[in-house]
Image (tube, rainbow, N blue to C red):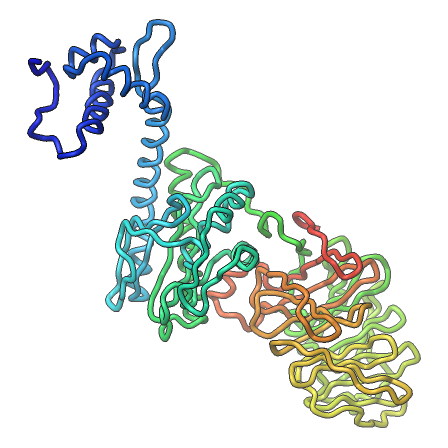
Length: 540
């Protein structure tokens, strides 16, 4: 057959791809003109026989690549091509918008900066910018698993619920190093932490000795357009440095999202202070740090000792008001008969939250509680003080008796039914107040900062350096870990209505940590029923 006008020369064919080449010729033929082509037009341009055209067009139509108008049987490109073209344009926009801020991060930290997208059940690197000391661990265009890379986890964590379930169901877990996550339940728990923090970590999960931090990049519609990461050798990528890098990556991701909004003239979405589905709500409290949380027993009203802020606050319906201010930090405090007792400059003050009046407390001699960092009182006025490594009993006349040694300094001191509780060696120690019953220890796997004993004999605990709060059973086993959007959880308390209140610190955090965790200093509320939590949405 004579070669028709516009047909592809046989010299351009690749052996074994004749059918594919014919399909591409037909697609190019339809795309090359603005007018609507019928079967005779396509036959004339390509030179292919009609039976061949019908078979190929039927296959292309089934995939959505082409579409036949039933009115005049003319052919046009199908919806699949529109989708693919939009995807290409979107990724091009992503790379263009991300290039400048991510190049700056590469120069600043000297490491490899990667830009990735979701590609099927994996993640694909679509661009990279390297610093002077970078050691790239993947090629541009290369694909890696989602479950064991920071880029992959950042892409996964913010997917819609249904898409996320399908993606996780399609993962074939493989142990690549000793640290690799190898089951769906562990991955889901890790993704909850990613959503809470806003960034993902990989600590030698895909390559031994390599660490990474990644953040999602959102488009103008709030969807995940991609993710950006910085990777490097683990000896350089320590947690403090990764937190610094994460803060810069989040700023860069924000700039890219703003670029998408500008391109499409979309208004910025109002940011929720907590990720969707978070088990916490956050009370609007501007504090430097929660040294102690004191439930009042009246509904969900509670008081907060803001130690570094030198203040006592009362919180009602999620809003705080200052009821006392001091000229020096508040060291500790407790609630007795509706009054807050606050220790400042080794002097005990009594605060009435109802009238916002306060003055020196004449009940306890000041010298008896000097140096205390935790205080608790029985209803009859008996006072216990945590002073360094000791727990003291302070009598009404100021007489002092040592009731426990080996306490971990600057940790919680609380009362449980018939027991005085403190922290020693990272464990919660319950000492009976009467009788000869033995001490009981609730062991944990990290240094405890504060705790609240539960009705079943376990405890909620805040642990040093963890972005989470944990519930441990009476025998010390971890029942659950709930991620927090802050790196320094401090005080924890239980209210009479079943809420768990978790305080946090803002004072002492680095600039990068404050960028990562703007809710630091607030109090997070977790609803519980018989020790189990219920999700709460939004702010209280």
